[in-house]
Structure formats: C-alpha cells, structure tokens
Image 1 (cartoon, rainbow, N blue to C red):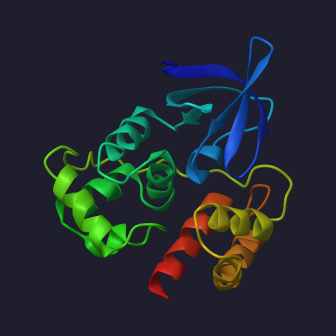
Image 2: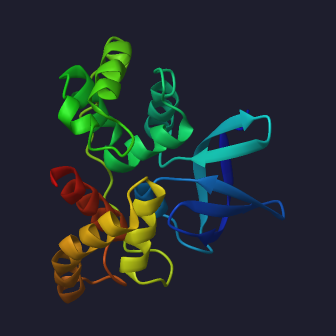
Image 3: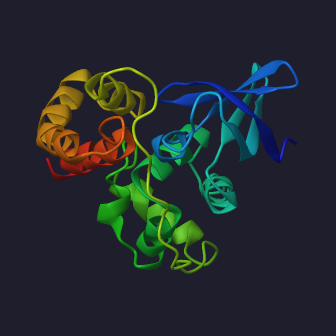
Length: 208
C-alpha cells in the first residue's frame, strides 16, 4: 500500500490533483477542501489510500491523517464505497461526521448525495461504537480557488460529480452567487474560495 505521496503539484482539477514524483505523474482523487490547499508548482505531502479493483488502482489523497482514517473507516459500513466515502468528506468534515454519527443525526448524513434515511441509519448503527468522539480541532481554512477556471464551472462540476443533476447544480450555483460576489469585493487573494462555495451549494441543496 502507498501510505503517502510527496512531490510537486503538477496540476489540479476540481476532483483530483497530479503530483510529480520522480518524473512520474500520480493522480490523486481529493475532496475540494484538500484541493483548495494545493498550488501548482509547490511541493506537498499528502496521506493516501489506495483502492484496488480488478480493472483499476485508484489513489485518494487527503489533507491530513484524520481525513484519511475517516475515509477508510467509512468504507467499513455496509454500502459505503470509496466514491460515497469521499462524497461524505466533501460535505462534512471528519469531526462533523463524528458528531452526526454519535448524535444519530440522520438529517446531516442525508445531506450527502446517495445517502437516504435508511442508509444514514445503517451507517450510524454500524459506526457509532467505532468512529470515536470529535477531536475538537477546527478544520484548516481553505485557500483561494485553484486553477484559472471560473468558480461557477468548478462548483457546477463538483456538484454533478457528487451525484446531483445539472439542473440542481445550476440552481445551487445561483443560490451561492451572492456569496461569491461578496468574496470578490472583499478578497485579498486571487478569487472566491471554491471549496467554501461548494459546501455552501451543498447546504442549499440539502435544504431544498
């Protein structure tokens, strides 16, 4: 297994990053919050988890060891594969997931595309005694948007990749547009925080 990858960030999209390691480009699938911390040309180290299938070897990269261990623990629940586990971490931080499971908060878990009420109840039942208490550490602030694509296209692609329809994604993007405009007016960085906007868009969809 590959426990971590250290290299230079060669490219970043909304769903993955490419790290150059010894002249080889390795693609790592990451959550938006993790990707928001990466900068093309910068050296970085990401904890990783490899998912082996008959037809593929897929690397998932994480902001820290806590995100990685939560990703792997989530997959021990019935019906939770790597794609759904990553979607859960895109919507909820590791501590938010711990609080939701410990508090039997079905509503929070059903904010994740692909998790219905029964699925949330099953996850709570299977993980409640194993997921542990919240660590109490606040998530690191996300940096400015990566890449040069407009935030609308990035957020829209992220929502569709997480299982929402194009029409639902359009509605959510419009809902968070005022937040993006406010960020542009007050920002000292290069543009709106795409990871934060994606989370806000997911929250707006969960309320619909």
